[in-house]
Length: 461
Image 1 (cartoon, rainbow, N blue to C red):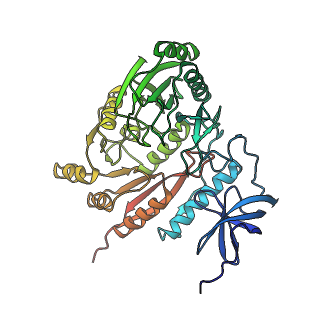
Image 2: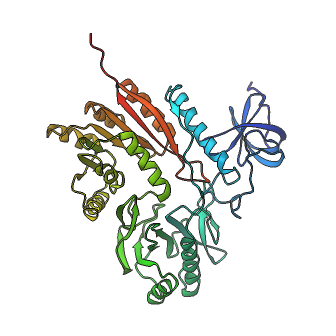
Image 3: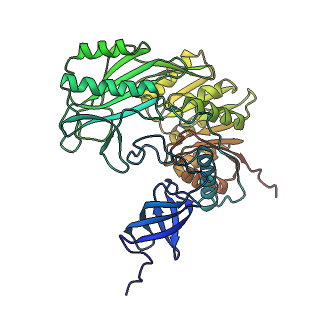
C-alpha cells in the first residue's frame, strides 16, 4: 500500500517558505514534503492551494501572503504574472543579488564538493532595468488580432504586451510599430501549431555605445506586402536606424532564423563598443545582451588571467571574438577556436576593425584543434573557456589539462555545470581559487560566473 502524502491536490494549506529553487520558486515543507510555489519568497507565511502532487514533491499556487518577506516588492511589469521572461521582479534587487550568490554557493558545495571555495557577493547593476540590447519578439494572432510579446512560461502562447521593462525603449517602439503595420498592411501573424501566417518574429538589436538600431523581420515567405511603405515608416520613426533586414524561415520549427537573410535598407551590420573595443554585429551574431555587465564580467576575467604581455592564451569558445580581443590587449598572442564558421568570420572582422594583429581564429572543435596547435609547437600559458549552458565535454577538459596551462579562467552561464566541471578539473590537478557571480540578467534567475584555476604543482618524490 502506497504511503499517504501529507497534502492532497486542491487542498489549501498554510505554509512557511524557507528557500528558493534555481528557477525562482519558493520552497515550503509540509511534514518534510516539499511544495514549490511560484512568486513566494523565503521567510513568508502564506495560504497555498496544492495544484499537483508527485511522490517526493508537489506544486502549489499562492493564494494569500499572510506574512511578507522584507525583500518583497511590487512587480512593475503589468504582465509579470503571465509572461515567462522574468521570474524575480517581486524580489528586491538586493534580494536578487543575495539569492544568486547563495545559489552559486550551494551548487559549488552540492555538485562540486567545493565547500570551502570562496563565492563573492554578486556584482550587480546600478540600474537593473532596460539593459537588453537584443529582443526577439514572437508575432502571432489571437482572435484575429495581431499580438506581439513574449511566451508564457513553459508554453508557446504569446503574452501580448506594449512594453518590456528589461529591453530598450526603442525595442518597445519598434515592436509596437511592426505590430501596427502588420495590422494595417494585412501581414498575418504566424501560428506555430498550424504553420499558417506570415510574420514570425521581429528581432531588434540596439548598440548601447553608438545608439545604432537594427530591425530584423522574420517571415515564413519571401514576399512582404507594402515593403516600401514599411521601410519608409521605420526610417521616419527611428532617426538612429542603421539597418533593416529580412530573414526568411519557411520551416516548421521553433528556431527563430531561417537560412536566407537580405538587407532591405542600410548596413549589413551595426557597431557597438565595450572598453574601447569595437564590434560589428550582424543579425545572427552572438553578442552578450547586457553591455554594461559584459564589461564587468570580462574585466574580471582579465583580472583573473593576470596577463603580463608574454603569455600565449587560448580562447576555447571564442564566438565573435568578444573576450579574445579583450585578452589580446594584454597577451603576447591569443588563439581563438569556435565551431560556428560565421562567428569566426565575425571574430576575424572584429580583429581587423580594431587593428589587433596578435589574435588568430580557427573553425573547429576545441578538443580537436588544440592538440593540433600543440603539435605545431603552440603552448598555452592561460586557457579561457566560456561554454554554452551544458558546460564542457570531458574530452575538452582533458584536452585543456593536457596542454598544461598554468591557469584556466572559466566563464559560465550555468553554475551547476560549472561546479561539475570544476570538480572534474580538480581531479586533473587544477585547483579552483574563487568564484565571482555577475548579474548579467537582472529580474531573472540566470547568473553568470567567472572563476580561475591554477595548476597544482606535482609533488617531487
